[in-house]
Image 1 (spheres, rainbow, N blue to C red):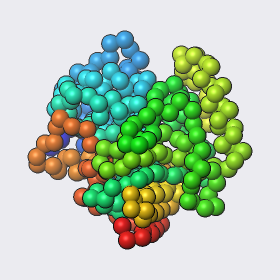
Image 2 (cartoon, helix red, strand yellow; image 1 turned 180 degrees about the vertical axis):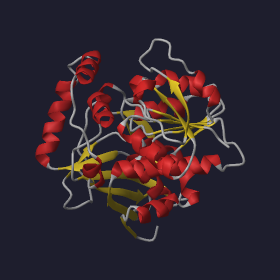
Image 3 (cartoon, one colour; image 1 turned 30 degrees about the horizontal axis):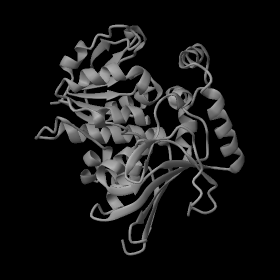
Image 4 (cartoon, one colour; image 1 turned 180 degrees about the horizontal axis):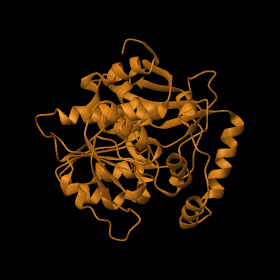
Length: 350
């Protein structure tokens, strides 16, 4: 039986994941900074000490790990050295990252002995799954874009930390079949999504997955907000880059962030849209609406763990998108039913 280790098990999303592991009666270990702070359930096999802030983290726990789930972000700050360590081992690595630069590190490496599956979280995994389900790979696309609309700005501490620092790392959009760095956010002018506000550029990893898995010329990801919010975000982006990254990190770690409760997160609504334009001019439009983004993330991780635990043939030495693991097992259908999400699809003879 595969040995599962959760890194960041006492964080907000890590706690939801371990609760689901307990409910499924799946044994697991945890790797955390302070062992004394962790209250283990009956299904916890080991509690490993790991301080990612240390100059020399102890990665020996990986010798007792077959599937690692990394819930500690921002990944470009805490995860780069760990990722290099993972590349030298034959194990499965899952994370929740929404950071394009971190995903691109794995997609670009030529020395990976493991199986890397980034972004098994609500945002990019669902967009990736929607594309796999509804966009044929045999077709050439002019564009595949994703759009998000949220009814709440409340996030976990880890998500908020990532949002604070993501502008300091490379961001990408696929433009004319080439991944190009985006230094200044932009608003998509030719947007066909009506009554949903302004499409403001927000760099999510599914753009890299679309580039990897499809014959597509252009791809970007966006959040749908009103004009005033878009103007404020553009101005804030310019101001934030004037502050040294180290100062931003220290300020965040030394401050307090509002605590996201389970009751609030279970009621957070979202609408995710994947819109594609074919070279021949025909369009496809897939929309998924629901709530409880963090709960969905935990369920995606549980699904991936179960798939990998039951897999008989190893698939090491590559980086996969979430849908490349989850799609054939029918995970999108299962999660849509479990969380009572609403899915709509329209196409003009794709």
